[in-house]
Amino acid sequence: MSIRRIIVLDIVGLSTRHFQYENRLPNITNLVKTGKVAKLIPDFPCVTCTVQASMLSGTHPNKHGVICNGYYYRKTQKTIFWGRPYTLVQTHRIWDIIKSKREDYVTAVIFWQQTMGANSDIVITPKPKHHRTGETISWCYTKPSGYYEELVKAYGDFPLMNYWGPMASINSSQWIIKAAIHTLKRFSPNLMLVYIPHLDYSAQRYGPENPRTLSELTEVDNLVGEILDALEDLKLLEETAIMLVSEYGFTDVSDAVSPNVILRDSGMLNIKLVDGKEHIDFSSTKAFAMVDHQIAHVFVSNPYIEEVRSILESADGVKEVLDEDGKREKYLDHPLSGELVAISEENRWFAYYWWNDPSK
Image 1: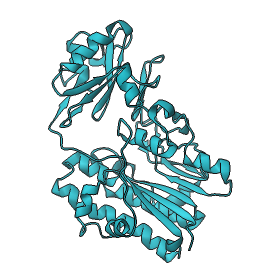
Image 2 (image 1 turned 180 degrees about the horizontal axis):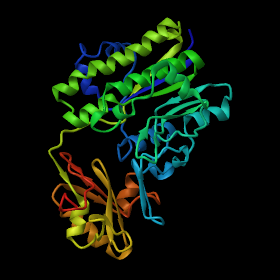
Image 3 (image 1 turned 90 degrees about the horizontal axis):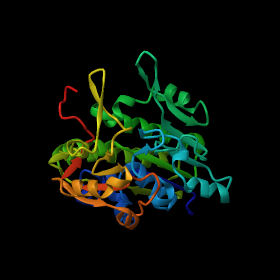
Image 4 (image 1 turned 180 degrees about the vertical axis):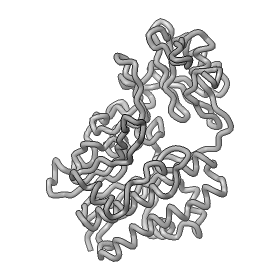
């Protein structure tokens, strides 16, 4: 039977080193043994938004503009992280290319980043509502409009509090899989992309080889099994190609580095007091770092670039600082990138803190 649909499951944090735990991964092991395995070298920086944009567009950050999970806009002196609009990706992605060739080809994008308003038939992406009272209300942007309300009737609200932060748990990934199976039954898409975040949380909290992380491999494998069972029940399994991808793996880390504290102590970053709390004074600051895991985009006033580079290169825990040539080599030479890009040592990560006194 010919292949009529493709389902891409993005299992963040899954690595080939996990394949040795066959007893924990029966469904994934079967897919690996009956299919093919290829090595994916993620774009730099290997963080969610960047790697997803590269995978889906076939271009590098210097083209699609997703330079990390966040952006700093020099004119407004504002940073944003986890932006949702599709316009943040400055190139066409796979569904755009498909629609230009096959208008009848049905595409679905479930919980991948920067998809709000995307040119896909079905889109589900979290967009919580922030009430003036301070309450955060779980909600998802969906296409077609009203689809989220249909999903809520069947499975309840998306468990937003279990998606990010300290309360992250398998609940969010389970809801996503239910929504994916519902979409499969309701729309029978030819291409369905599904983001499964659970293993990402575990590896970040406990470490990649921690017994707790390894124990949760089975939970993720069960989710893959639910997709396979649904395809079997719908008699669609033989005509469906399953692709498992992962955006990145993890390394064990021991301590954090705070580039903004280093810049502050060197006289390059200035602060202002607002209600007794310290905030960066962007108007007078010579350099600051927008950090994202193990990389930092460093925005520097032109006369101080070399001085700032020297400061960071000599700092404990900083492995490398990229200038224009370095950024070009890693395809990160985009106007939204910092004048410099710092990379931490493998066993360290970057913290965004700019204060020395936690009470401030």
